[in-house]
Image (cartoon, rainbow, N blue to C red; front, side):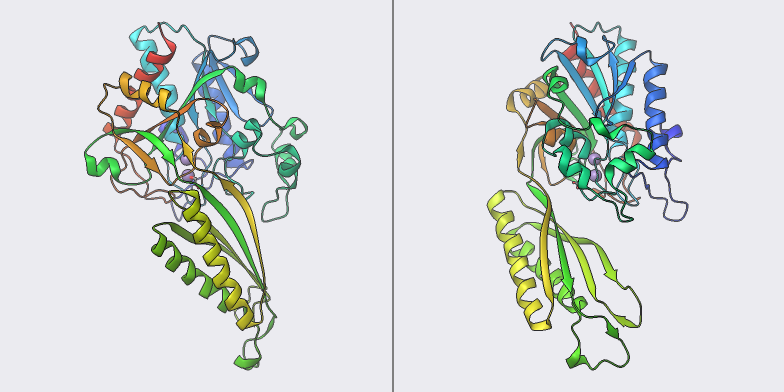
Length: 401
Ligand code: GLV
Ligand code: MN
Ligand code: MN
């Protein structure tokens, strides 16, 4: 499976993955998913939001009794220059766990589905977990229709161009009502398992997190002839805001990152008219996150006044704290022998979004460097196999007699 996936959407220079929603690379990942489903005799369906499903024990979710289905999976899209594992490890492991269970002769007493949730990273339209947010009703159809990528293409246009019907997107409570448990396996995005010496962990909670867009409007002018005192340079205000973000996050024990920036007109010899920077900030609790973001906004505002800059801040997305359901988490721990470390994380996941609607849980696989959202992301083969076996045990415990 890795051999087939490896070349899809990989940049020849950076060796990172660029698998953005509804692009050619995404199409190839989706074709791979469908082929994996069909080669195993699973019933393949695409839901109204473009998420892919591969069913064992039923031809469609419609025939499943409420709360009966056990679902596992993750996502195949990536951040810009992402690693091979964030997302795909969960999907590959799901198919491999099913193969393992068939090899064990396991008898399924509940329907099982493997999923690929669309646009988890939000790399193209700016909002993470679009597929699961739509399905759970956390993103309205109207708001989804307004999403645009950097070239101005709307989400429905992109879906249509990729051959999907966007007119049906929206909440899918009937599908969710069929699911009794969703378990997502994911590469760890930190070093807790490396430090504890464990191959596999269970998720406890996800930090609240969000994305804010800061628009700094100044005045374009000549870089050679405009006196420093006459400038309204938004880059200065932006630079001070980045430093403030670092300072405030450090003071509060939170994290804050400006990882994306757009500059207009983007000329070497022109003072910018606009600098747009996207802040990603996360903290262990909501109060801390609110305080950090308010302090960054205040610092930006004060500096904007000094620099003669018009500032606009828009919260583009927000995900509240997720505490994974204790009963399912405890069941996983029991199935896995009770000695599995339970870890919190600052990374967002579809399992976190869906936890507002159905019982969800996560398994983490050791990442020896902790690096993620980078081509250097890594998990050793032995650890990946341990992840597959743990997932197989969990699915056997939940879905087999
Ligand atoms: C997704 O990986 C996120 O945490 O932003
Ligand atoms: Mn990610
Ligand atoms: Mn992920």
